[in-house]
Amino acid sequence: MTRNMRTLLLSLLPIFLMAQASWGANTIRVGTTQSLTGDFQQFGLEQLNGLQMWVDDINSRGALLGQTVELVHYDDESDPQRSALLYRQLIEQDKVDLLIGPYSSELTLAASEVSEKHQFPMVTAAASADLIWERGFDNIFGIDVPTSNYMDLAVITAAEQGSSTIAMIYADTEFSRDVAKGVRLRADKLGMRVVLDESYPADHKNEKDFSTLSVALKGANADVILGASYLEDSVAITRALNSHGVSAKMIAFTVGPALREFGDLLGEEATGIIGVVQWLRSIRMPTAQDFAYRYRSQHGNNPGVHAAIGYSAGQVIEAAVRLAGSTEHRAVHDQLHNMRFRSLLGHYEVDDAGRQIGKTNVLLQWQDDARRLVAPASLAERALIFPR
Image (tube, rainbow, N blue to C red; front, side, top):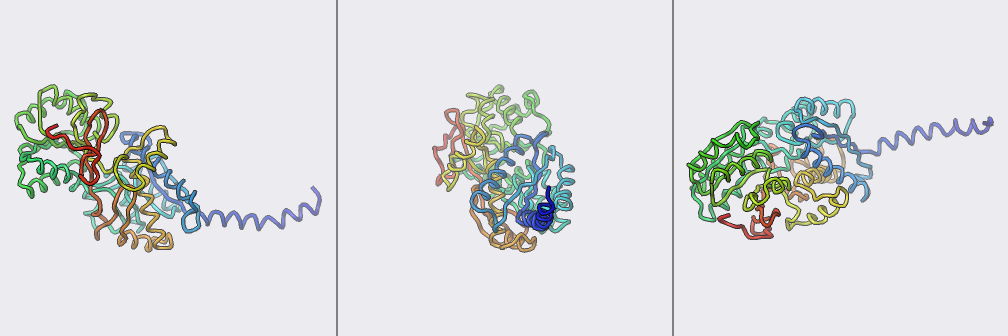
């Protein structure tokens, strides 16, 4: 190398280093943990896919406030304490600019303790337990329907069809207990009677575990059976109900029926079962079909609700940053508190605690081996089959 060449390179070095610093400064870093292993793996992977799709979209259309968006994410292994530790790392070591919450109320409760301590606004993903917003925190903002309102549409629809009695079963988890509390309140307002109200241990996922419960449901002889449950136990409960000859005009569950696996595992037994869900790709709302098509092109399968939730969490925080004109925490916080916005998931509007009040769930029903949107009527693609 000649002396002149060395001199030229040395003279360019400060410019190169300044450019590197400038590149770093022109990146907005969004931090999250998602459950890529453990009990919540299926949902965490979907949420992460949705979030990454939002990042790709925002960068392809010109970035955010002129800056590239980078997603910094870790596997929380479906563990609340690990999630909390990783959010501390995201804030203190990775120096992220924005935060999006993990999957589940359980993990979000732990993670939001960290964000609140650091006065760092966090937009939740699939997390809806009322306790999240009952602690007096000022930095947690929900996009999901709160659990105490989760089954409102199912109870209202049953009442409109002439039902007067409800048998309710629920897993002994924070989420399901809140759902049950909401069902009691809504049923009372509508003049419906809850004739069976029973919880079951959350780890009971085998068909034999629900025999006693099925006998009790048969004895209750209610018009409607509502279950606050997850995929494995909603499948097992449905099988147990059929094996014991339990019938009802309407059977509805949270979480499970929204997943394709529910129909794959149950076959004809899934017919007529209703699912309470936040979003469905067939929903007649702007961008739903476009999102579903692009997601399927990238991943080879249709998006589930948790992909839509991940994408929507990104949209909400993007809207707050654009309105604030900054990623400064207090400015973003104020916009998240006050703005009204329509994401892929639906309307965003929160109360003073950050609790979602702008969105309602929808109902699907398994018909012809497919999930069909049946309520509300304004969005329905098929008529509700009642009795099922």
